[in-house]
Length: 274
Image 1: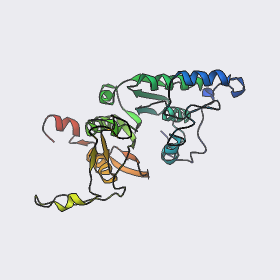
Image 2: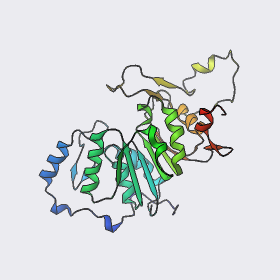
Image 3: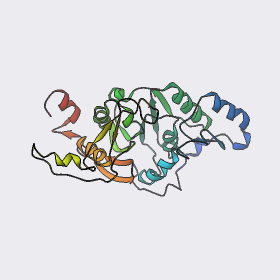
Image 4: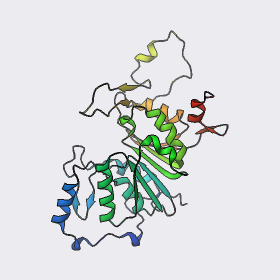
């Protein structure tokens, strides 16, 4: 598969996947259907009609995509992609537009899945969508060249368990993103500290996650929010090599050390051999 990285301003486009001509679209009917599908979290451009034009984060998730686009080959011909927590399908659409052979988006929310299916249909893109939990990723057959795991980690009650499962599915690259709070400075520490060394835990850059007992940002599913050092420590601990950190909440990782003696870290942990 091609490995050359190009500017994301020059995407590969499969001409067989071209959408309906914009001048043939009834924009009023399209706007009505978009509204009928409920509130959108992904601001997609469907033939000139925006799905979330007043998003509190701005043009989301393009504001994230613009930082990672140059870390993904423009020509994804023959590649497979898994988007975990696909929401309205933005990343699935962008990966398919680059020519990926198979794109699978999974989510647990029917509203988001219905929105994603509608968007793909409007853009005439062949994308698979399944209702599936992140904890069920292990049941998917085989691996995927690119795995997108963005905007999900902090919504999980068992985030590291999920990450250790996900690394089994990564063939080439994992794109990881999470909300970050606390220190945004990455720092590595000694391999060991004395039992009575309590001072290290007062360092705001020491790897840590904040547990949200009730809710944060009016969302009861915001469970664990790490600082930057914790993100990088957990990624390394899961056997991933950090290739790039294009913006404060996002990492591009390679599955370099996800197995030890031929076994995945999670499997060793579960049978007590880690």
